[in-house]
Image 1 (tube, one colour):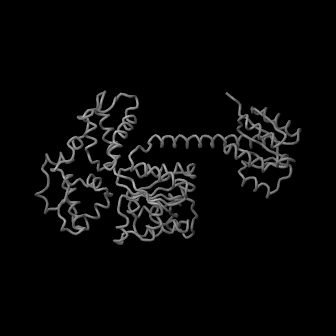
Image 2 (cartoon, rainbow, N blue to C red; image 1 turned 120 degrees about the vertical axis):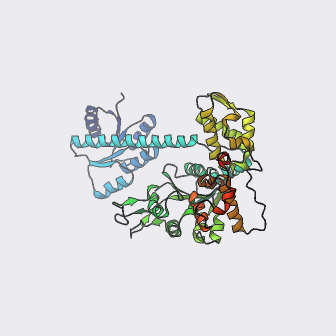
Image 3 (cartoon, one colour; image 1 turned 90 degrees about the horizontal axis):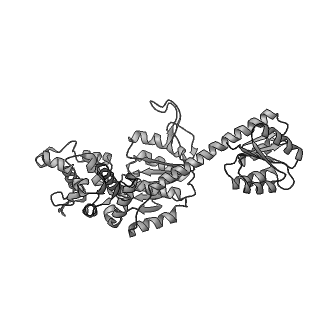
Length: 469
């Protein structure tokens, strides 16, 4: 096993000899340099695990050496060594990234312990960096696939906006890959080394969403047994992705607006503001301008979020990408090559289908087909019946009632989708492209709590229900 390497930088030969003997006895590989300039040349040729530099040197002082080393090797721990320690110089060194600051008169065991701790810290930083690279690579494995003109526009927009600090609002139906786009923006930005944190605003009860976003103080509500940081704090220095932002309650919208305007938050039950350094990306599958006009979403928050709008096309609007996506998902779910491809009739069925669930639904269909297939090509019988059957007048959701108001048209369409799915609300919400909680609220507003008795005679029979499902 290779010994850990330590680089000693000191203009005093006696000090270099003393440290070399001490650290070699501890099992380290030691290289010394008589100046900062010489040390930087050595670092270009060799790798080290710890560097120890004198503070006072004629050609380049220890602070400058520290800064130059950090610019070359950010994760290399640097220990500052001096004969004349002062509080000011110690603080300056630590602020510039030094691991620790020790005096030359320190005992041998103290110096050995500092080097040992610096070595452990360096290993942790290297492992952390490697883990981030691995996570980034795994994220890249789920890359954005598309060559259609609509996706080319999206890619060009990502390149333009990624390295800015501007807030971005991504529009797109459910399943179009809004979070995937948000991650790509993050990884192409200057915040790529920071965390990427996401939350679906429609997936949490509204009374818990605020606590999750902004954190809470101990005792602020029943069950708050300790202070808890919110996701804005967790994503410090990185990107925070708010999915389905249109589902946010008015009171939480006010707090989000403050966070965007003042760059600070106040935890639930707290009184002191907390500064934040976060880039916000939001997404919605709703028409937020309509929500604003109808008073369900704050106008001022909408304009804060809608600095750069980015619209994702539905899969039915870029059918030419379906073969590319199929090939990608086959490699993902059959990595050993046990599936050789998809039969022409199967691909034709995929091309005809309208994909209400978009790319997410296509991925699920391919995963299912790989599981059911017994080897060779994906056949048409491996695909779900609804995909094979394709659009038909019997299952059509078209409404030819131009005399209806917009609200009546929406109500009629929602009821037709529910009838089509056998009143499976989760499936209906996927087709409608809205959150299940939104569908539930709309049904309540229509006075419909369960299956409408007035439409009971229209409900599908047992066989039809199975077919709709």
